[in-house]
Length: 152
Image (tube, rainbow, N blue to C red; front, top):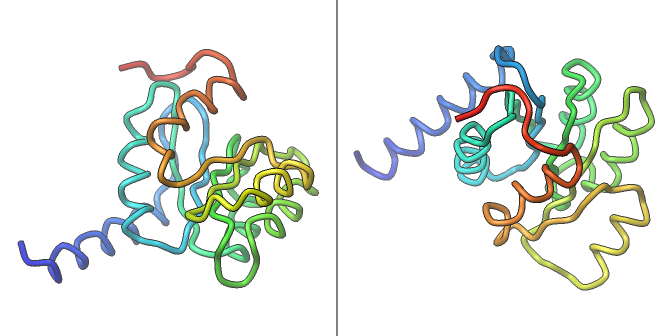
């Protein structure tokens, strides 16, 4: 498969993921990022974690705010740098509507002042993207306890 064909396949996967309804018991996760390659890799990873009931996707702060109101996720994993609103701005809007989900801010640039700013603004956690695959399972366990729902 060529690089172009791979990108088309990833795009098609993401289009299908954005429109499907979660079908398993467990945590409902909204993954928000404007990088399709990261979304595809992170979605595949999250789908394999015990206790995850479904992963839905958004690509901007505005889309995350709208989708969170409809989907009512338990957990939002949100990039800080996105079009239309930063992760912190979108998080404030999402958390202002009950039931407020847990929100973890992610970023590619682990700026030393961003983590304290995100936590002070109400984030439930902060993860540098280069540590996403190593740290997210522990963050989920810290926020929600032992895995629930489907077990592998």
